[in-house]
Length: 208
View (cartoon, rainbow, N blue to C red):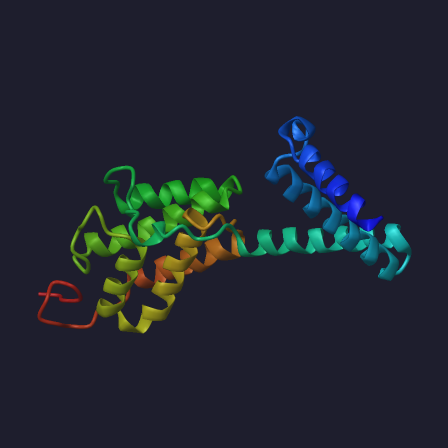
């Protein structure tokens, strides 16, 4: 009895393996996606059972997680792209210290804190160039300017580097400045303007 069934079963298997019977079968990618959705559905179902409040509770938890992620994204700003080490501080041609300060004050009066911070940092660096404490260099970045100025004015090195970070975060990091950030740079610009440089044998920091 079993001997007769085996040839019949093999014949049926060969017949069903023909391509005509599988023309409408999903392709490997579709099968993988089907398995993925099935797995995801199982995970969601299991989570909804475990979550307080069932499916509604799971939705609330997901919304809370999403809100926290968005808040963290807003607080930290956009990911850095590496531009801060290559972008020039003065990207729009030479302007005087007075012009940068006037622009900074106009932006601050209008509540445009990002632009106010940028112009105040440019005013600070331009002031040091006009006083011959920094060598004028159009391609200089904010970080480079702060490092060089810190050698001429070591008392203000930490504050200069912090100001450069504020400038970079606002200009390239997607952060938003506020009045406090602007006042930080404003105060630094004012004190650096009359600061006495360290005497050295080079132009940076020298008064000859």
